[in-house]
Structure formats: structure tokens, C-alpha cells
Amino acid sequence: MKKALITGITGQDGGHLATLLHEKGYEIYAIIRGQQNPRRSQVEQEFPYVHLIEADLTDPSSLVRAMQTAEPDEVYNLAAISHVGYSFKDPQLTADVTGKGVLNLLEAIRLTDTNNKVRFYQASTSEMFGGLDYNRPGAGYDEDSLFHPRSPYGVAKLYAHWITRNYRESYGMHASCGILFNHEGERRGLEFVTRKVTNAVARIKLGTQEYIELGNLESKRDWGYAGDYVEGMWRMLQQDKPGEYVLATGETHTIREFVELAFAEIGLKLTWRGEAEKIEGVDQNGVVRIKTNPIFYRPAEVDILLGNPAKAEKVLGWKRKVDFRGLVKLMVEHDIELESPVKLI
Ligand code: NAP
Ligand code: F7E
Image (tube, rainbow, N blue to C red; front, side):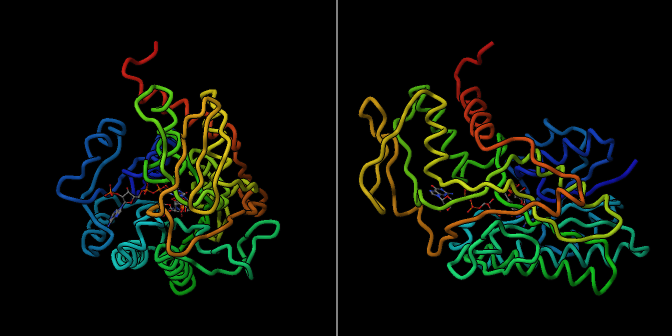
């Protein structure tokens, strides 16, 4: 039986990965931080087979102890301050956790794994590319595209990306980076735009909310389903050689398109009026459903993300299963079920 150590078990990807590794027969350990992590009991209920270890990416000795307890074959580093907007508000914490935290974990592995047998996965991100005029994605960003991060989060992730590669080159570690484009689903945090929208759409259907306040509706994202993406992470660590892999759908859509599709799921068709930071989305009954609020705009934006997953498809045999429409539908349906006072039988 293989053993895996996961960081970020309380987050979106941690939940999907724990489910996948359990199905594959792994013994699973995961670190959890904080004296009273509010999500601990939910994790204990949902994943009773996961052994929880108290540790924090900013506490190197706790990571050494986690490694000594778990003695894993594979380590998946999913923990991070992961919200781009929040990273502008707390850039130093973001650097400590999302950037230097990865160095702490790599060191803990190097110091405890004397036979150099551990395989390591680092959660790199499309936010490293930036989407600027001189660096447009063309047919899609791939593993060789230029980096130009546009947020404290993106900059911290780029450090993490390169320190992971450096540990591979310096110490021969089996360390891989998945450069993942946005992936969403029923486990997505409510602070991210897709889940914020689908949850609000569910509440609008049920009559407990009237409208949604959003920021920039024009940025474009390459959105896939998180359940498909954790399969790609696992496949990276099953390769003989470590490397970098883009996981993406190869399609890009505006936030506005996501919003329109989500409302269509509950039978509302939006039309738009106004421009720039004063746009409103109005349904066919004349009710305003979308308003914009400057607090949701970022100091610097990534206008467009589009990924080219050709290498992952060829080498890993990976392909996303859920398409854009399917993703919106599954999220809206899940949130209607979640928000319903009486569960439908
Ligand atoms: P998420 O839902 O925000 O989860 C982040 C996790 O990090 C949580 O479990 C959180 O635990 C943990 N964490 C935060 N600070 C920590 C610390 N100091 N020590 C230990 N754990 C800490 O993120 P996600 O969407 O699952 O994404 C997983 C990883 O992939 C992240 O690294 C993210 O940056 C990266 N990524 C995500 C996407 C995407 O579209 N989802 C795309 C590319 C890359 P607490 O409960 O303790 O807060
Ligand atoms: O924003 C715009 C916002 O926060 C997407 C993380 O998982 O993927 C994620 O980062 C877009 C941006 O995700 C709101 O300005 C408009 O253009 O859902 P998001 P993200 O920034 O793309 C990458 C790949 C990661 O690695 C990250 O960890 O939507 N937007 N209105 C809004 N965004 C939010 N959050 N809230 C709004 O009200």
C-alpha cells in the first residue's frame, strides 16, 4: 500500500485528491493547521480514512515531524494562500506561505528522506503567465511560455515553482510542477468568482437573494473541473521522470459568459446595460441581477488565460472530461441542492 501526504486537505483540491487516492488504495496522511481549524470536523466526517497531523507550512519543524510520522511515498503540496485578490491585502503572509512555505516543505523532505525515494508534487499556477500585451497566450500557454506574474500570489508561486525545480536539479528529487489553469466545482471556496456566482444564482432561484455584486466581468479564464485535475496530479507522480505539465481545457471564456450561463440554468436571460465599472445585468422581468462594485477589482488584473495541455495529453494520457457548460451546470445544481431548506427527495 502506497502512502501519501497531502497539504491543503481542507481546500478544494485536497478533498478531490483524498477521494481519488482512497479509491486507489493509498494510506493517506494530511496536515491541518491551527488550534481550532473550523473545517477540521468536516474533514474528519467526510474523510475518516485520512490521518490528520498538526502542521503549518510556515513552521519548518512541524513539517519535519509530519514527514517522520507519515513516511510517505508521495507528497502533494496543495496548501497556499490561494486567493489572488487577498494576496494584495496580505502580500507578506502570501510570500511566507505560498512561496517560502514550499522551501520549508522541500527541506523537510530532503532532511528526512535519506534514500531520496519521495515523489513531490507542487501546485503551480497559470497566474505565473500574466496575460499581458507582450505575452498573449496565442494558441495557449504551455510549459515553455514566458512568466510575468501580476499579483503577490503569482510572484510567490513563481518562487515556489523555481525552488521546486532547483531541488530536483540540485538533489535529484523526483519533484514535479503541475501548472494548473483555473479549476472549479462543488468544493470551490465561495470567495472565488465561479462559486460566488453559482451559489448566489441558487439563492436567487430560491428567493433568498436578489442580485450579485461583482468586479471585472471582462477577464477571460480557462476553466475546468477540479475532479479531472487531481487525476492529472496523480499521473505526474507515476512517471519515471519528474517534470512540468500544463493542465487546462484549451478554451477561454469571460466572467460575463459564466454569469450568463449560470442564470440560464434557472431560466433567467440577462441583458446588459452601462459600461466599464458601472455595468448592470437585468433579467427578462426587468429585475437587476448583477451590479458591479469597485471593491472586487484588483490593483493589477490578468486579462486572459488560455492553456495548451498537449504535453499532459501526450505524456500522461490525461484529458479533461467535464466541459465548460457541464461545469456551470453541475455547480448550479449542487448549490440549489445545498441551499434548499428542504432537501429534494
Ligand atoms: P484552497 O481551496 O484555497 O485551499 C488552500 C489550502 O491551503 C487550505 O486547505 C488551507 O487550509 C491551506 N493552507 C493555507 N495556509 C496554510 C498554512 N500556512 N499551512 C498549511 N496549510 C495552509 O485552494 P485550492 O483551490 O484547493 O488549490 C490547491 C492548490 O492549487 C493551491 O496551492 C492553489 O494556489 C493552487 N492552484 C489552484 C488553482 C485553482 O484553480 N483551484 C489553479 C492553480 C493552482 P486552512 O483550512 O488551514 O486555511
Ligand atoms: O477570479 C474576476 C477576477 O478569484 C477570476 C485561484 O484558484 O485561479 C484562481 O485565481 C476572475 C478575475 O480566480 C469577482 O478579477 C470579477 O479576473 O475566481 P477568481 P483567479 O484570480 O483566476 C488561479 C489559476 C489560481 O491559481 C488561484 O489560486 O474573476 N472577478 N468579480 C472576481 N473574482 C472574485 N474572486 N470575486 C468577484 O466578485
